[in-house]
Length: 420
Ligand code: NAD
Image (cartoon, rainbow, N blue to C red; front, side):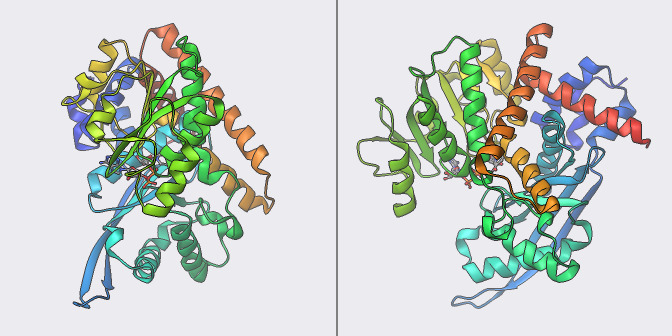
């Protein structure tokens, strides 16, 4: 039987391989079962030519990806990322993470992820529209409301989803459920935009209580102030927490008495960055991660906490709002230091959960109220949290291993029920 995590490295990143390896070992999976769970169902790479404006007026060629990992529990589901660092291996690992996330919160979807290797800040709006629509044309045969349903991720938002909806509908007829995270006017769900950050905040509060921390005096530090980080900060301050520092790609800002989050959001809307926010001290992202605090929330990109900076982390709880923000070596180090990590597949599952609600509303052609969406979200997340927390306690394992174990078990069971 394969027990070494090394063999998994051909299929996903080292970090995910290590985390999954612990769950696979505990479940006693054999080599064939591991292969079945690790390999992608389908991996597609397309070329997207685009004539760009500007002095050069040149033809540029971009690469787009869609990796469909597993659909034993329902149609493939996962975001679409626009970033210069996008490459197949990263998309593959993120697609797989979606399979475990949808299984953990028990929504009837599988896992997928896509992206385009592009710096969107270097393109004009109409160029981004053409790029997105050409990507959709090429991917259309494998997309669909019962096949594969994209959503926003880093550097994509409701507008990109509207372009995908339009292009797909031209080819296949009116199909709002082919993407989620759409503008409300086009069938988007109330509560979707803030869903991931809202869920992160609710989970952080539950975890704080379980660790005997009083949320009203807890100091919270958040790296990343985009969709997820800013909504998590807003919700946490509404609940009464003290968010003392936040950052973006340009650096962080600190206010020991607690930031005025709506003011920070307005400042970012006006200036494009947190720098210069009135009443705060500037700091680097490295300094921000080293701040003494009760709750640290990495909400930017992967591998923010790694073996080079983990010694500087002084938090009681790390709540993974970003996907894969803690490397496996840093994870082991934090655990040894007694820090509890609430893993990404649980902490940031609010987004995909409300994406599921959006899909249901589109299929039924019956929109829900925001209160109803958020109440159902809180219910799903608390059930997943309770289940992971009690399994972790009962088996004396990390919340991450408990979460992976439940997700893997559910996925494997669905595969076995359907037959290979
Ligand atoms: P976003 O593009 O809206 O925001 C990203 C934020 O991180 C920005 O403030 C950016 O300035 C900052 N950032 C980027 N690089 C940084 C760096 N090197 N150091 C510090 N800050 C940096 O993206 P988002 O939608 O908020 O996603 C953030 C993370 O959450 C990603 O890992 C994403 O995969 C994950 N996630 C997002 C959703 C969602 O619904 N949007 C759902 C689940 C998981």
